[in-house]
Amino acid sequence: MDDGSWRILHADKCLYLAAVGNGCFRAECSEDEFRQTWRGYLDLDEDYRAIRARIDKRADPFLWQAAEHERGIRILRQDAWETLVSFIISQNRNIPAIQRSIELLAQAAGEERTDARGVSYYAFPMPSAVASLSSDVLTTCKLGYRDEYVSAAARSVLEGAVDLAALASTGARDAIEALTSLHGVGVKVASCVALFGLHQLDAFPVDVWMKRVLENEYPQGYPFEAYSPYNGVFQQYLFAYYRNSYQQVR
Image 1 (cartoon, rainbow, N blue to C red):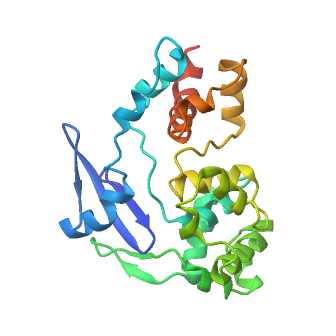
Image 2: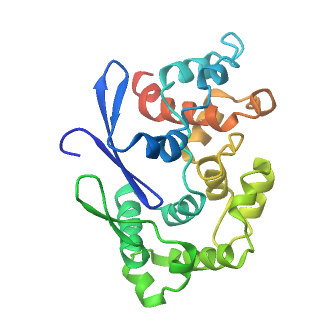
């Protein structure tokens, strides 16, 4: 936002969050709302220091450096349905296009609400609302070929073919397998949904950046077993470090 704060939309809620110095932040909501919604969403109860302590600096200096450099990262506890649709929409697109399509979909099927500052926004639409959209309306959301994937996902979730709540309590491998049964959902998208929507912290999405990390930094193979069940957390450290910092100083 213009004042330096962040406006965060999550399911049907909206939060303004601003840094105020000394590692502190101001959240524009009641204490009850913060405890009930945003504390969990921000994953503040997970001990990331303990997770990083699992890294042996001598055995894996690259991951150790990545984790130290990017240690502020947390795996947000995002809504599974919203995450599923968002990653389906994201395939082969840039971030502005993804944001625009999600915004249009919310306007087409989500409920209009007003945030703490009096600004209107649209809640992310429920599966029933998305499933009821006609193909013409979906076309206006600029989803391209992905409109049939989004519609199919909505029907699958609505009819119980895929139970997102149940997948949150399975293992990452089982969750990914179930998600890839959805029309248009491959392993990469399913892995992202498992990690960011189901909080399956062992899920390890591999995109073009992670392929470079694995090829260049782990030519003998990445030690997945050694880092289970937190491979997804370490993936985020590696991804951010490699893309944002490491390549610039090599």
